[in-house]
Structures are given as structure tokens and as C-alpha cells.
Image 1 (spheres, rainbow, N blue to C red):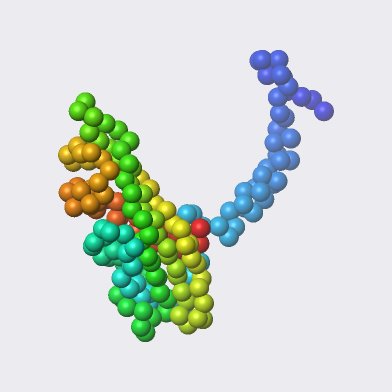
Image 2: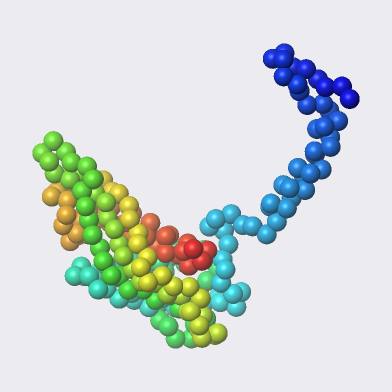
Length: 192
């Protein structure tokens, strides 16, 4: 058998060797793509779950109204999938999402010249459970789900006052609630 020699002096691959490996490569590519969906596209929930109840999340923190904003964002995120009808109750539904906000903390990660926080890391802790009402069982739960992200502050501050962040920096808190809802819904639908 004749080997092709490249300009660098190394033996090259002959046409025959390439043709022999093509069926193996094609089979490998075909097998690796079967049965898998891209992240964010699938759902492990049973097909009969069409109506989701998402009652108001509990709030074990001293920060009032946080549960209203986060619950509403989770409802909107489920609605945006266009697969489910979402209602604010746990009656006459196929599945229920229950949540309890356990903690919210803030920590400065960047300071300006005046040594005030200009960027903060916000962490939200929550217990989340998804129940299949028809089968009367819990399909997914995470008793210690944690969501954390960094945000630029509209106006620099001491950086550790959660109430000031929630009430004063509305744009950042809105971004946090959207990111949080996506994280929760993705965790439920993809069972991670």
C-alpha cells in the first residue's frame, strides 16, 4: 500500500483510509444526535400537564413584595413557553409550582473612587417544588435553589442594603427577577 508523504515529511492519510473511516464517522454522528434536545428546548413534564397553578410564593425574608415580583416573573416565564396555561391558584390544575423565598443577600464586588459600591452580587435562595396534581406526586424539587448574579447600580451606595437595592434600583431588580424566573423555569422543565 502506498502512503502519501506531505511537505513536512510526515506520512499523510490516503484516500482509501479516508473512505474506510467515513461510514464509521457517519454512524457515530448519527448515533450521537439521536434522542437529545438542545438545552432550553425540551420538557420532561408529562404531556397531559397543560394548566399550571403558581400560587404566591412564600417569603421568609424581611423584604416585603419580593415574593409578588418573583412569583409574577415565574408565571410570565412559564407563559412565554406557550405550552401551558398559567393560573394563580392550585385548584383545577394539572401541575403546581410552589416556592418559598428563604434568603436574599447583597455583597459589593466593585467600588468607585469614593469607596461606594458601583457593582453588587445579589443572591436569592428559594425552595421550589413542582407537583403533578393528577398523579399526586412531586416530579421535581430543590429545597435549596440558589440564584446569584452581578448588577451595576444606578447610583453608588454602601452596597449591602437589600431593601435599598430592591426599592431604589428598579432596573437592576427587574433584570434580577427576569434572570431568576428563567433559572427556576429552566430547572423545572429540564429537571436539573
